[in-house]
Length: 77
Image (tube, rainbow, N blue to C red; front, side, top):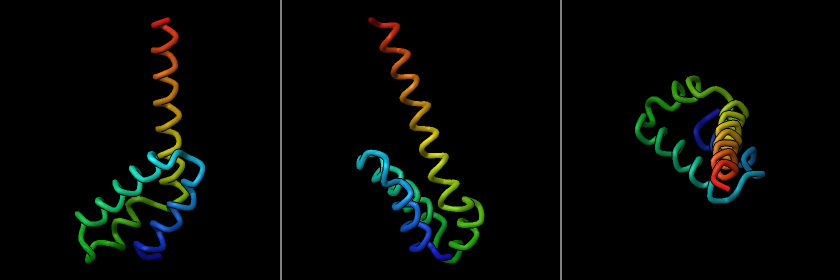
């Protein structure tokens, strides 16, 4: 798997989150690849794991953030 395949799969796996959150996540990982350089593409993919794993982490972080927001809101009202 190369960077393009990784990012395409990640984008597909994030299709069920908001467009803004998806674009933010994709920009982050594209930047991560850019900073590592093309010569380190394979090692970055090994480090990140599968696109499925990355998507699951992103979604878990979003769920956690939403729980915090709901808790703060409930305490405020």
